[in-house]
Image (cartoon, rainbow, N blue to C red; front, top):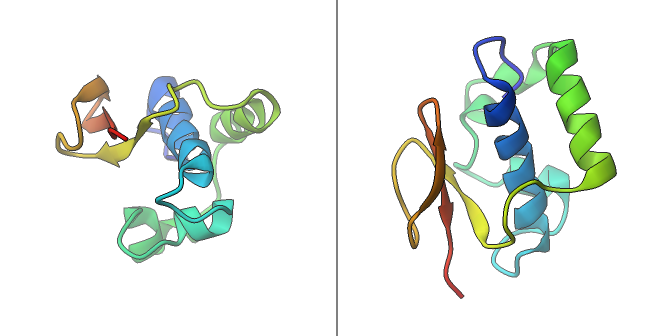
Length: 101
């Protein structure tokens, strides 16, 4: 979510999902493994992850690493469609959804 077209909230929510997944039992426990988990992030599949990020994205990532996720613990789904147990929030074209236990 380091693109210029991504809103501040979209960047923060996306980073938050990665942090939440690292703590959730159904996902890998490292940031690398969450991000590179097969089929999870299109930027990995299309190579955009290798492009330089903007300062705004860097500052949002730094904030999240220093302060933690801004999402509830059970918001671990992020996609362009609704999934899981309901929508927590929609930001731009992305849904951030709950996963029931």
